[in-house]
Image (cartoon, rainbow, N blue to C red; front, side, top):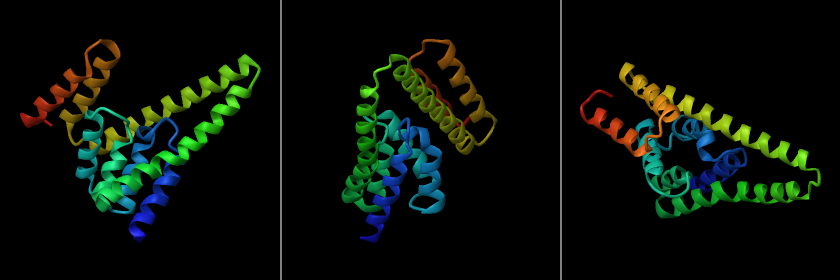
Length: 173
């Protein structure tokens, strides 16, 4: 039972700072799960993240899979609740505060600042994850190519996923 309590408390605290979603703090989640607590190894974390990204639904599915790995169905439920409840309560009160602001300039400033913070955290997270999981020139080239294609084309992300899959099956990455 102490494992469930530890999972609940650590993910609840983690949720309070996950501004921009779980993906914004993915390197910290990886550090917590793999390095600090050693709940799973790096490959399993990467697999769970890939599953969560490929599946429809919320991005916190990585946390649900982590909980499931640690303590089965009960662990999945505890992890999911722990990652959802603090940020939900904070957003509820933040939204009420923002709606109470009468000055439209101040309201827009807060909303733009929040958007910039979330985008910055997600980009920082992507950078950190890329540095941790890329092992070789081919992996870095794939990452750079994917970024370029995402920014400068209208390719559907499934094409990029398929490209990575083919390169992986062929043994290039």
